[in-house]
Length: 424
Image 1 (cartoon, rainbow, N blue to C red):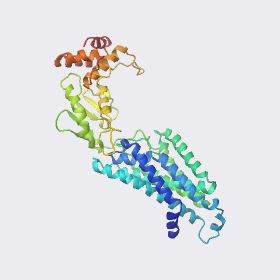
Image 2: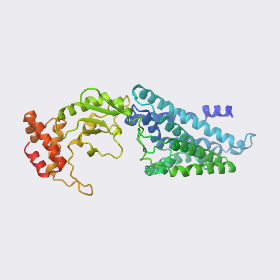
Image 3: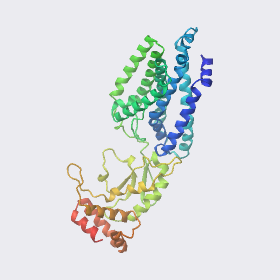
């Protein structure tokens, strides 16, 4: 069996599977570095996001590999050999799985080198998320092997891959339900969420049992298929009644605040702390501009560290920064402008009816824009007369105007807001 596996790895579909998975891995990592840059948990989670495409490729490769004998009309010849009938099938599956997983892991190893340079948090059990992803590749290869045995046509492989992509894309809409844990595709939890160990073990057992069931069915081993099927069902039931993927608790160590020691306070969660120098450069000048103004925030904090259930409006002293997709592949800040936009929560007019709708006079929105532009020190355009007039006032008068705006916005005093916009 070892010699047969070596032959398959050299001459079968396996080399092409390795190249395809490597290429797909590099492309996927290149198009969305903001999902994984600087975070080990982000890299492992992104592997699971990528399963939508990677599983489709593995199924296509497995189908092409296992359908060779029937396409070449040598299946009866292969069956006449003294080896057990299941052995060639398992060898074909193992060759494709090992090669595909190796090609993908080489691509992700390159990304891991970039993450290791800057990562500030290594915990959270991300390696278990990665392990489950590798097991999912094995299950996908087994699906392909079964398809190749049942449908010997050449078009079976690409059709099976496309069907998998569409099918998993539909399953993604289950995201948020406990049943989503059955899918190999990323379950929607944040990089700082803590996936219960019980769920991870059940996921791994589900994928192993599913792989055994598919291989046994392809080899026509009824007894083994029944046993594997029973185990798969027994594991799937507790998974489907498990925790919601969108209601996972935060990892306390991941969201532990790391704060600046000088200037207006900026605090990031430990998992995002590799960005603190870049974030501080953008945020501290704005906080310094607001320093001493009544009602203005005193600090900026990573929203990952926000207490569960606390809304943005409940803490007027804090600006909550969204850093979920704010890293580059090299660990830098992806978009300073998006970070500056987080300060718009400071000037947002808090006027909502019971349904949550915001029915506000358009003149109020113009005042909102004026206050935001002043706060962010945006450059005035030639036709922006209100901002020009406001900037022409003495600095203390500008700060008094902004304090009056914050007070009126907090009370939803429409007339005061309109007057402030007309007479800065």
